[in-house]
Image 1 (cartoon, rainbow, N blue to C red):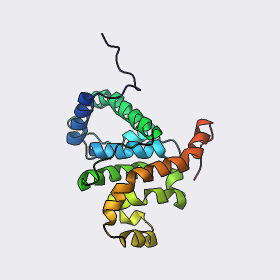
Image 2 (cartoon, rainbow, N blue to C red):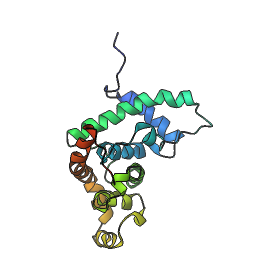
Image 3 (tube, rainbow, N blue to C red):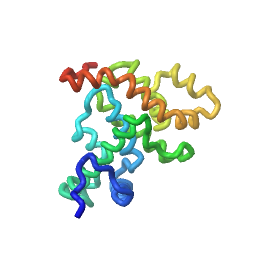
Length: 191
């Protein structure tokens, strides 16, 4: 008999598919959006508590009880830990570059989670790491007009933004690592 999974146990393919079906049918965020949230939380300059970012999932309360939602949390945490592990290995769990709709969902989740971090939104240099995702999420108002004009002047700029999304996430991670180290030492960064 196998021991029960821990929060560090990666989801099996079947567990992932089951979680994806639930997220896709019962939340407006969808699985790609949830993955966007997880990537932003994993690289954010400060700590975004689980209960705060999990609130972005918005389960349909008419369909699911509190107990139903709580039963899903361990699998969500396991998936989050997989995302963190992938980022530690310089990889990201992104939609296919040519899947515009799924990438937009990912970007919406990424932006929504980034907006939960006062340090991230409080510093224009830090916020610059979200510009590509803001444009991919159709949130151009979150990008400085001159930066937006420069990006949009490139041919096929949306394809380029999707193609470079993994690098953008890893660049944010690398920039925010010193801030996250302070958090681990008990010093929370301030905006």
